[in-house]
Length: 248
Ligand code: NAI
Image (cartoon, rainbow, N blue to C red; front, side, top):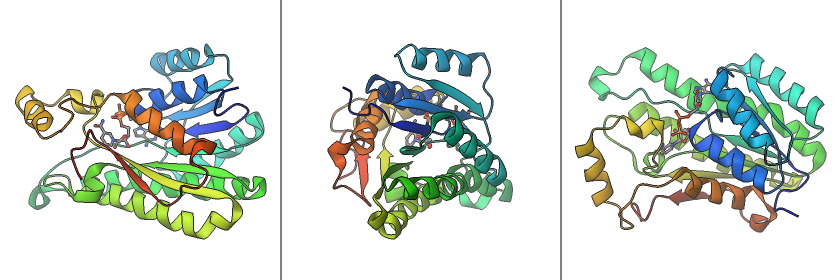
């Protein structure tokens, strides 16, 4: 028996990166996986097959997490096809960095819509189902910059701080119905999002990390598995920084 045997997990933006690593780890622990991404192309189909190869049911859905109506539709479909939704991971996220003076309204709106409104959309659609089940674990993928702020990322940092406050509010509102909500705040994780950084910037970051390495997607997936499973049955409304000790 895995830690998540018999559970259904819905993970947004999981065709690649951290979301995919979480889906794979959950599948190893026996969970059936529904995941979303903007498109399910060849890469998305390959992810779907890789997860299903762990011996669980897995379906990838093309859906824009920032879109309220699309989210309601995809959540209803997942409920019909899987029977339950026990774990929700709000992972879809983008960056559109810029200094405040130069940030456009479009940069601000896009990041808030994809990173923060998406979580509202999914929590709004999934919690009636979780309430009827009288159990559920919600995980919002925040960031250390949502706790500490970051120059040049005010839109992204604000969206991530919002995800933390959203998790805490849902934890307070729905705890009595058996629903837990927490946030993970990754530090510097080696993914497509960070691969584009120049070598100099990368070296500077790593120097600030006590463990002297960038995080791997599996480092995040392990903590997500803890928060999704009964191992964390008395943990709610928390934000766990997974950053090699970068921020204490
Ligand atoms: P990534 O860019 O590799 O993956 C994000 C996925 O979300 C992509 O597959 C993308 O297509 C999807 N996506 C984007 N917009 C979407 C939308 N509107 N609807 C549905 N899916 C959408 O990013 P990564 O690095 O895996 O990040 C995952 C999460 O972790 C994000 O929320 C990010 O902000 C957060 N994070 C990442 C860190 C890092 O160092 N990589 C550090 C802290 C937080």
